[in-house]
Picture (tube, one colour):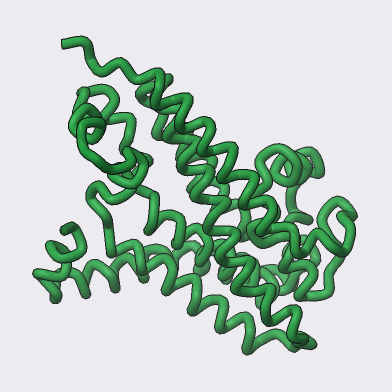
Length: 254
């Protein structure tokens, strides 16, 4: 329904898509400006950072497109409108994700893909069949990891009721952090996003394998193919958290 309503005004949708493409592109413009003053960032060149940026942007864009509407769950919890979703014969999470589905979020995926194509043309990567396969696996796994973070944040909103900014710190903030190489961050932070909130598997670890760089924290070689397993674990834990949070919902009491 939301897709049909969006496409009913095609010119408006096209302008929204283009404006979103330009706005999200400002992130990479900031990175380019940094490289106008330095030759490398944490030992990584501009095309290598663009490679990280493209992977992170496409993964986050997929999650934001599919399930980003969960970020507005706190409003429904506070005003009690979540009740209308509970009485419908469909999973609540699916309904929340479909609520006000924003097709304009395709701009983030498109922008990330364009930056990724630039990185591929600027880098001289010794491609193998394994590395070629690893790229789409990484994007899909990264999207699943970010989706799990969205769902976990939504589950937290059942308790906090007004925690959209906290959720954004891990979703949008995490996506921004992954646009930069791990070597610019403190080791404690890198450990945290590797073993606690495993965002490092969205792009840092597989990108290190593709680019022939040392793995963050000296992880073993097989870690490059860990993203699907990490994504499955994150989704399972997020699902458990979602069910637990949903059971705590008691409406507004009026």
